[in-house]
Image (tube, rainbow, N blue to C red; front, top):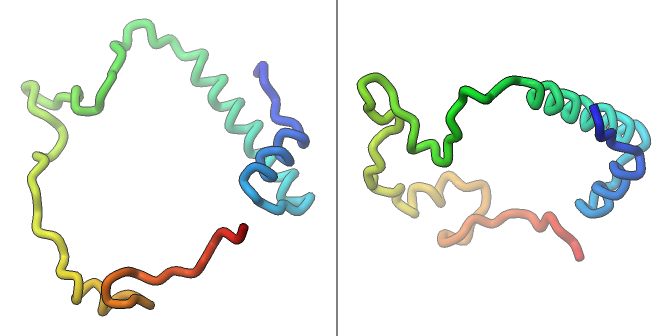
Length: 103
């Protein structure tokens, strides 16, 4: 594996994401990220020379060339009063959610 994530990398990404990681969390994140990079390095070793590139999943075909995806057909949407009645908190027009970003 060529690239290794360092503690400084983890700290910088956490800073950019506005996350406060404990030293234990930072160590686990370092381990996990390096494990992911190791797995990607393994995948890069697989011979894919006989695999045709796929630009869109819509190019996938099943038996006899039939599309493996369902038909894209419009369906009726849910009625707003029914949905809002089930929401934990709403103003009957929008869902109310707690603020998650303080700046």
